[in-house]
Image 1 (cartoon, rainbow over the protein chains, first blue to last red):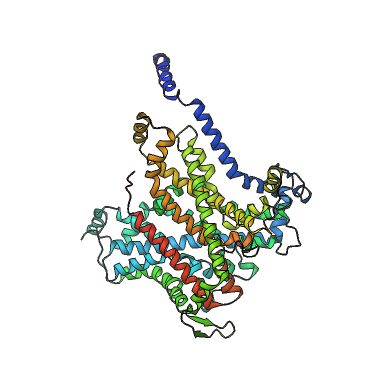
Image 2 (image 1 turned 30 degrees about the horizontal axis):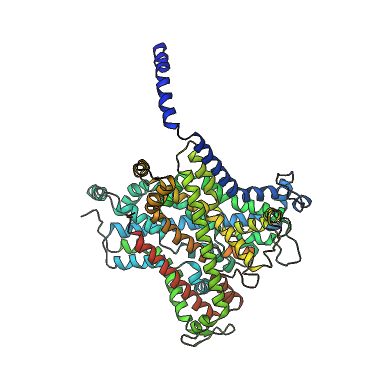
Length: 297
Length: 293
């Protein structure tokens, strides 16, 4: 113990010298950089901070000039009021069902199709691949009108199926899993076959456990996509019970020019609408950042 | 064997869900949109009359549509230029590997999770014509107090700022990843040769970063074309006087408010051509990983 301590004491000055020498050109520069970054963070974060602040104030505080930049004490009553006025419980439930439905549904069907494309040889494989490729070019607004008709013909207006299934029609996830499976060594499938495992067994017991990081990343991306989709739910739902939260928020915003917006309730609603996706992104950041960069490249 | 499984029916069964969804909700509607774009459809009977290219001709000649196109381009240029420049600057600072570097990514990333509609709501608050802090600040600094609900140019600027803000986190994450891939030795070598920091950035870092920049250019353009619908709907509904009526919003108006399905479908086709061009460009250039400075 004592020798260790002594060695430590002996070693320390040398380390400090090295550290100082390495750092010497930077101290002012580093401070400046941190300062600039903090300004950037402040500018980027201010809108959200201010939205939160307003959501805790009562009307008289909201309209005072100059604006009051500190939170007040009316958080609970504002959130309660916003919850009641917008039917927030139902909105959040719907958004959760849609976001989880889109994420789980799209990931599931994409894993299956990518598995088929990579691990089987069959007629029309190239065709299928190109068909999937084309879908990358068809974002919802481009095909909105006929898709709306299809939903109508299926009787899917105001249903969860109508809200989720059309959002799964894209190939990005299939691409991601295809890329990933292509990096797997061939021996993996060969060994499985020698051991007498069928393809589904191979997918379930070997491929899936290796894919968790990709699945997690994709889940975040798709959850956020499903939660935030605006155009589609606006079109195919027209009842209160089927609205998602980003649409339902509008019931807090006056559309007529004469009525002044009650910002404190609107912001309370906005905070509740943005909390779930922000929480998902912060909790799953590690997988998400990696997966995002891999999947988009 | 080559690591493949035998199977005649299984691969088709595995593909079926994806193919079915894509066919029913994507390919068939796309073909139908193409067909409808050659028809004049009555909103009451749903019957169509073949009119050839008349819908496209009407669009090309229409002042409203041209106006909407130039609004969209201005909007996209604003979002791309402001967003890429801003996030590159922040990313460069955050990539200097100072202690505490990891924290910045966390605190800068989250706007990505916001929906454009919610972002729009928040910025409508900040720019509120009477009590918004940005309005108050602008009035104090410039003495002007424009109302973006009445002034078209200002409305466009406000929506651009709101839309850009939402994409900053996304852009910064990609720029940071790209910057980490720039070899440190290259920069140091240039510094030894007497190049200043600015010169090193423009001559070495920026060219190596160009694939990321280009990717973000495409993603931000697509975002500005399509995903800001909710933001526009919440903030301006295309107003005042069409000043923020981007193409997607125009399409929505024609398809679902005016029920002019033929014209709306023709707009879909034109949008498809624009996205297609952007996507192909991205795929052509994405293959080139190496960049020669």
